[in-house]
Image 1 (cartoon, rainbow, N blue to C red):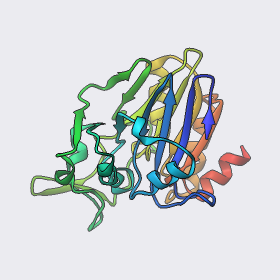
Image 2 (image 1 turned 90 degrees about the vertical axis):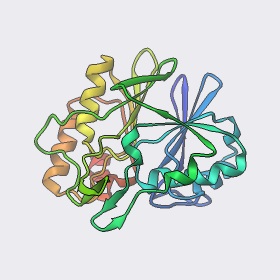
Image 3 (image 1 turned 45 degrees about the horizontal axis):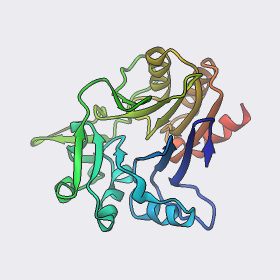
Length: 255
């Protein structure tokens, strides 16, 4: 759990969590502030709910859920909220509904089965304020020559399977006045691109950067470029999770 002066963030799902918490390939965090609560992603199963129970977190207080992108390891957990008997507001971009693939393996979810008990809020603007001082934004533009989605990801549009550039990718910003908290899902469009965009858009320093940075299959030269670039932004706290990868996490810790 991480807490700033105004915001409490609890990791409910990640690839590496210590006992008694459960782990899986996925990501989910609970964000609490000013008596409000929202979920950012829901992992791949009910693990985020089980971990919330272990940590004494009451998910019935959650009204809204942000889905960063349409992969199963960030959205499959939605179906396990059915027993809560609530119509959750799910905030996402429309492109998240397209079928997703890693080469030939299906990596999306069946959204049709969820439409009866979820209230989908479609983000159409580049930046959307979902609560006072809480924003989602994306997809960010590609601005450097070393970050782009891995070429083995595909999306099915109609009957055409094409390379997936994650046009639905959302990131979350909490504006705390003296700085921002930036949460990413997988950073498929590049963590440096995302950080650069957030700093320019909100014109504030980043107090906490946390989430998946999708460097686990990256070459060492790319990891070096990414981390060298992140160092230039003078970020106060960098907390990598999920798809960041052991090598990148090791280097970040050293730096």
